[in-house]
Image (cartoon, rainbow, N blue to C red; front, side):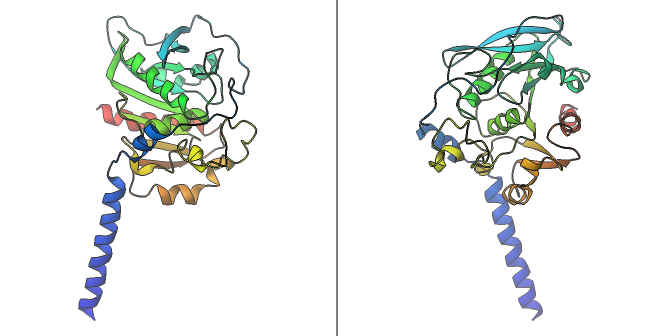
Length: 286
């Protein structure tokens, strides 16, 4: 009987270890599927949100970066830029479907720690050319914006981090599946989504009956293909995200997706999430 119990325990340990190893192993399934996938947009047009023109101000520099033949707009906070020294970069991926100066001002917790903050807009937003695709072409734009900022003379290309809120958090999470992006870690606040995008039917630009369209637009269906760690922060009162807690926890076991639950709703959890992410990346820099 004692031998039987030891054998069962040993077998279970091996099974758990095998599952853990399999989930931890990076694979290219997502990138392979993505290379063969061609989204069919049933609605072509601009992002579903109004915007104010982006301009240079006393605090902000308006820039352009190239992505797939488009020149897209972005904003950089002037604070911490030093022509004599390269500084760590925090790429902030904004919430909603338009970029504004307030998005950068929300990043004060990063600038206080010495980071230069850069926020890109994407295709179809803020007067940019291109069509709104919802978590597909926008990921490519975010990827290209990071490559662009890494080449700037004030940027320490070895210390680039990405953090996004809401929709921007979804983009940040999807970047963890990509190769060739010069970022150390990515983080998000309220940025984990399920592939059904329930409640978003009025803005979906693709045929929601094609389940692959949704699958290619969310991290949680492709976790085994993660290339870097992603720290996802979810407010305990963020009903849209927290309602999927059990699903997210189960799918993220033994993976590079690190889920943290923070007090607050979709908006009030943002600042404490940023502070926790700073703690994580500051430990890495030491």
